[in-house]
Image (cartoon, rainbow, N blue to C red; front, side, top):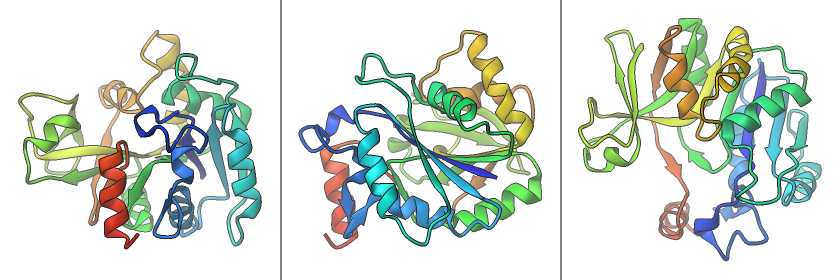
Length: 244
């Protein structure tokens, strides 16, 4: 299995903090956000290498970070060649670029580089093996107003995805998807088909919307938290939680 960490965004909503520093390298609790992700990936024996896909502006920052990492699986930083929010490839475009540049022909775990989570990636992987099918990480919410700002997932009694809708005004469930995916080897090859059909290369959830209509996809309901650090307020709140 290969791991892909998506870090090619420009995080303009966090300016000026992210003007010269990529969001995944901002510190929380004394270390960069991306370190928490890599530490969890390192618990998966099946993963033999990690690919970090960056834009051109921050590729050197991630190269320096990777060079300083110790006790980690091999990390390869890939520069996607873009240098602005206007020219970016989009998350799905970056995933496909990583597959091509890294010659990936394996199962993959794909994680957004700005998601700080407390659930066990090992338990998620065990669920993936049990289902022997593609999976997305899901969290149950009590606040139905909050869930309207997320990608809402409807699951059946076996946790198979029946429907996925981005930011619905009338949510069909109280569960939302987060950007941590585990895909089988044959599904990885389908990303190229998705893009060649002219579908959106942006948010990775769009691929999942397309995919679950073609083959079984299951939702792993996390036992923990996942913080999407997209705003100054969200960053401040998470830093308080981590004692910073």
